[in-house]
Image (tube, rainbow, N blue to C red; front, top):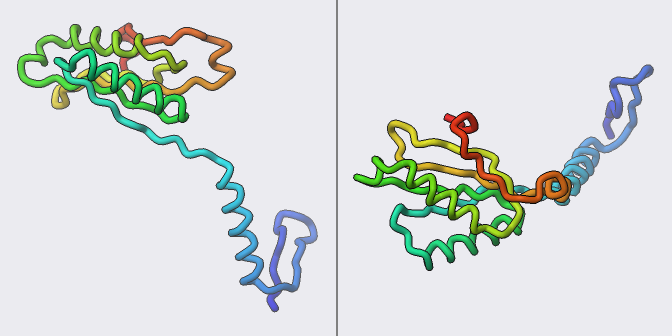
Amino acid sequence: MDLVEISAGTRPPVCKIMDFGKFQYEQAKREKEQKKGKKKTDIKGIRIGFKTGDHDQELKRKQTEEFLNEGDKVRVEIVLRGREKAHKPLARTILEAFLRKISSPYRVEELMAPHPNGFSITLLPTPKTNQQEKEKPDNSIPIDEKQVIH
């Protein structure tokens, strides 16, 4: 048996005589039970090429909708290779057209422009909660350069 301080912040401090190992076990069990109810959100990735066909984009759109419906964030990335790097505005329009096809409610959390060393444009759509759906029902895509995060 051990003398265990239960709450140190009170005056006078509360102590109990108990088995300290059993006390630690019960605390760990309570913490584990609290964590069980929370859902961990994952970030799933979808890559679209510059020349990706309509059918392939349709499959990737369905995957994106499934991920959003499950509550996961989705990193949608368009990769630019070779001569495609000179056509960044066209790549952005392809990416925006892809996002307009998504029927699940989402909001764009992050837009990353092409970096000097990395040659891809990335968007991070996240699923909308019920409160966010009431505020803004349409799917929004940040197009302004002011909203681009570098």
